[in-house]
Image (cartoon, rainbow over all chains, first blue to last red; front, side, top):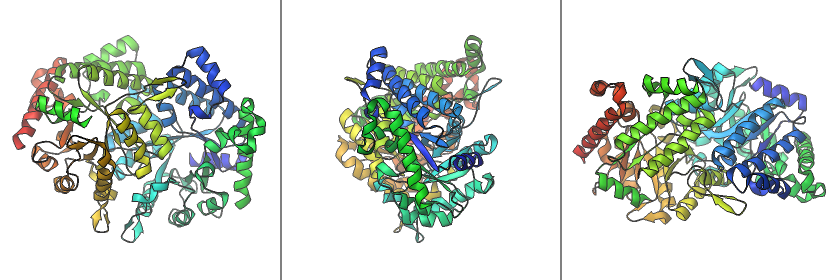
Amino acid sequence: MIRQLIDRIQKTNAPVCVGLDPMLSYIPDHVTEKAFHELGETLEGAAEAIWQFNKEIVDHVYDLIPSVKPQIAMYEQFGIEGLKVYDRTVKYCQEKGLIVIGDAKRGDIGSTSAAYAMAHIGKVKVGSKILTAFHTDFLTVNPYLGTDGIAPFVDVCKEEDKGLFVLVKTSNPSSGEFQDRLIDGAPLYEHVAKKVVEWGADCMDGTYSNIGAVVGATYPEMSAVLRKLMPNTYFLVPGYGAQGGTAEDLKPCFNKDGLGAIVNSSRGIIAAYKQDAYKKFGPEHFGEASRQAVIDMVSDINRVL
Amino acid sequence: MIRQLIDRIQKTNAPVCVGLDPMLSYIPDHVTEKAFHELGETLEGAAEAIWQFNKEIVDHVYDLIPSVKPQIAMYEQFGIEGLKVYDRTVKYCQEKGLIVIGDAKRGDIGSTSAAYAMAHIGKVKVGSKILTAFHTDFLTVNPYLGTDGIAPFVDVCKEEDKGLFVLVKTSNPSSGEFQDRLIDGAPLYEHVAKKVVEWGADCMDGTYSNIGAVVGATYPEMSAVLRKLMPNTYFLVPGYGAQGGTAEDLKPCFNKDGLGAIVNSSRGIIAAYKQDAYKKFGPEHFGEASRQAVIDMVSDINRVL
């Protein structure tokens, strides 16, 4: 799976990923009004607004990028109706040739992680039938429970040629509270990084492993250390743009081959039309604003590579 | 919310929680066959089997216990259809007077945790309406991202009188891989415990805080330390029974007032009819087997308190 991702990154010359994390406040009024008019101010109405918003953005950017990362929480907040649109968005993006990273940060004890793995990247047996539930290409997972909480995901990656991004060093302000604490002289995130390398050693797909790591753009010195510790691990890098990470901050996430990282931007792309730089497009043309924001993001990143 | 839970624990004299974590392999053939006959070997058929299974168990145990803990992963693996049954199960249990602990172990950066909090214990604004998505009384959450990943959940607990159980020391075999590593002379789980106390200080609801902790039954020496570190924190204790924890192991999780912990059992209760001790009930009477297993669990635990 990581080979497919790299292939598309090289074809598009865009090591980026658009975070489809729609908040209702990002969606232009004409879209929500139409959805509410049809379905009321209901969970269904909200879900429909999100779907129309997502579709317009995907239609405007899919040819420029290798992948998208829908954040499942933004759909889960609208319950079943929201999750239907998550599923619909995943499938639509895959039809458009995009690699889909399900941002779910799941993780639990072994038997439960196995259920999550089936839910999101694997298959589930029902009687004599083998079915799929949600079905993304990659999934983000949380390592707090250790190896037996991650192993079931890794097993499914091997069987189904899927991939993971394990949280190592996250982009949020208080990520250091536990992740940076020193254990035998090295921060916790380095210990997690070593485990990620171990978990991924058996999942190589070309030069890189299908088991990747989440490494926030907001802590570039730490990214540099992690890049050395995990030479064959792909990094999913959140935190660029709206969260404060700059293109310069991203540099240490990449290897000398220009590969090794895929940078996510959510708000900066999907709510571009609200930014001064893209206001000229107007809310009616929010898809075009997102397209321009992707073009600008790609050139900003390629400038430093 | 914790006061309501304690109240029901005292009324039932049962500091226990039944884990509604249905795997298809736990469900008696006559239940799955009926569901597959009606709806096919489909996600819908699987979901229907789970619903019938859950309902029968809840109907047989609801008067004996204060609460249930559905593990959302077991529903998520059947996609939208599975999640509909999660929602239906939550609502049914609440109608039966049970407190519902959503075992979802969510956690992310602030804005995303806020969406998860709305999804599971809060409310979501859609236009001028305030709606609910999933709606449990407590939620389990993962602390790896630190304070800003937990704060949005805590805020919702304050607004809505809901509760959390934050993963501190989990029951699985490799939980020690990161959780037990020493930081300034104390294991990571103790540092997390201190933060849980901090997060919960502002959420007191009587003697205990609405912000609880997950502390596995399988490591009793560690439970004893955590009990002292977190005197006003309720523990949700997984790992009893099928995972290896005994009643004696549970003792250190409780305070001298006989309160402070609620012990979960999933497989041991819901698949009781498969155990030698309850085989006499037969698969047709699996609900009665579960009822007897609850009675036995309660007396086993009360014996050591």
